[in-house]
Length: 373
Image (cartoon, rainbow, N blue to C red):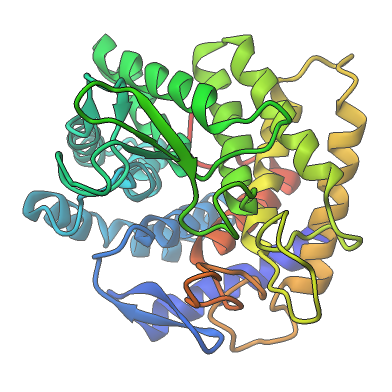
C-alpha cells in the first residue's frame, strides 16, 4: 500500500516542479495551488518534499530542484521578506537544514544558523516566550504564543547542536515549557493560542485563531502539539514532554471519526458537509511514528498508538489521497486552512502533503524527515 502511494506522490512532485519552475505553492480554493514567490510561511514544505523524494528514490532530479531554491531562501532572509512570525523554523528546517542533512552543504548550514538567529530575535525575555506573530510591541500579538511554534523549535535545538551555544537550547526549552503550561489543558486538549501581558508577562487568556471557538480544540493545533512535544522530548530527554505528547495523542485518538481522519475542530457540530482536515491527521501520523520510536517497548500506549497510526494512514491513502487524479497538484484531498475565516475550507494543504509523504517514507524506509539527526 505504501509503495504505490509513494510512487504517485513522487510523480506529482515531479510534475509540479516541471510545470512551475522556480515557483512555490500557495493555498487557494479550487483544488489547486497558486504558484508564486517565497513570501508566506509554507514554502519550506515544498522543498522538504523534494528532499524526501530524493532520499527515497535517489533520483538527482529532486536534489537539483531542491538545491535550486537555496538562493531564494537566502534572499528572503537577507531582505526580511515577510518574516514577522515564528514560522522561520518551518521555512528553514525543511530547506536549509534539510539540504545540509542530506548533502553536507556548508552554505546551507550557514543559512540555517542565520535563520535560527532570526528566530532567536523573536524571544521576549520579559514573558519567557517566542512571540508568534507581528513585530515586537504589536498591540494585538505582542504577547501571543501559538501551539504551531513547537514545530519551529527544532531549528533552535539543531543550532545548539551545531554551535554549542546554549542560548538556542535554553530559548527552545523555555518556550516548550511555557507552551506546555499554558496551551495544554488538564484533559489533554489544547488551546490554539495564549495571550500574556507584554509589560509584565502575566498570563491573560487562552483563545483561538483558526479553531471553532476559544474554548474548543482545533484539530491541527492538537496535531502540532503531539508531534512538537515528542520532538521536544527527542532533544531534551525530559519525560514531561513525552508524557504531554502522549496525553495529547490519547485525546486525539479517542475522538477520531469512524474513518480515522478528523474534522477541523473536535468541538464543532458535525453535520453534512462539515470540513475535515486531512492535514491534521497527516501531522499526527508523523507524531505517532515519533512517539513509537521513543517510547519503551512495554509502554501500555504502544498498541493503541500503533493501531491508530495504521488505520489513519490506510484511510488517508485509500480515501483522501489524489491517486485517482493523475493531474492533481496536491497529494491529499479535504484539508482545511481557516474554516471559520472561510479560507480554503476544503482544499489541498501543502503542509498536509509534506507530512503525509514524511509518514509514508518513514513507514516504508525509515526516512524520518528533517527535524533531527
